[in-house]
Image (tube, rainbow, N blue to C red; front, side, top):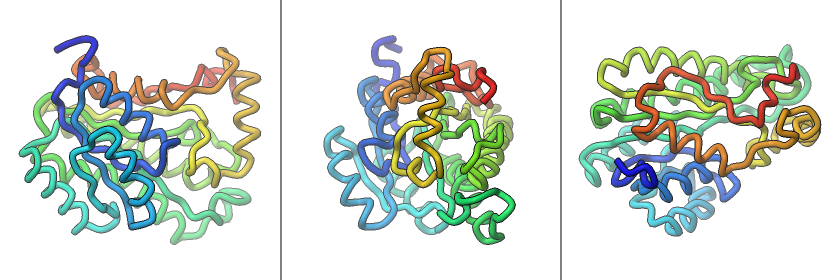
Length: 258
């Protein structure tokens, strides 16, 4: 293993790139710089138009339409992986969704269908993806997903997404326990607030950014590149002893008591 290219020739898929400001895209660029071979997913034609030029810019090896709530599409994704590569070394899971109306007001007003939908897409999808990928994942393989502090604390405006992220973090621990005997690691990154397409749906997000700049020990937020570098480390053999963890990349703002 080369320390300057720790992902050389490792094959992985990235789920959740929406545009060039996505955290998933920051991770993708870091992985390519470290030597990884990547395949990507999108959901629907609208997102394909945004994502395809990005995939081509890093010589991604395939782009597959995959709605994580559709078992047939999930199976088709891994059929493509098997056909193209015959196996798989890592997965980046950067998929989350909640209804806009369930991110407004307080958590008390969460609808039943909104609660279930947020959990299916933002939490259960990690388990479903790992189920389908398991036969293809190599020993020493790794999975990384994305969380947020709202899964640990009650963050105004994060509401049902915070509860779904708490479920996601618990899933990381159980999946790590199940896949660990095969040498496969599962971790989460809890990134500080970054201005992404998804973040725009959270009420008061700009105020959160201001608070981070005022109170975080580094007196700033984190960048897409910093999260990307952390994910690259966790996915690489350099992190071979780390599994079942939530790694905070947030300029230290978690420790400020917000």
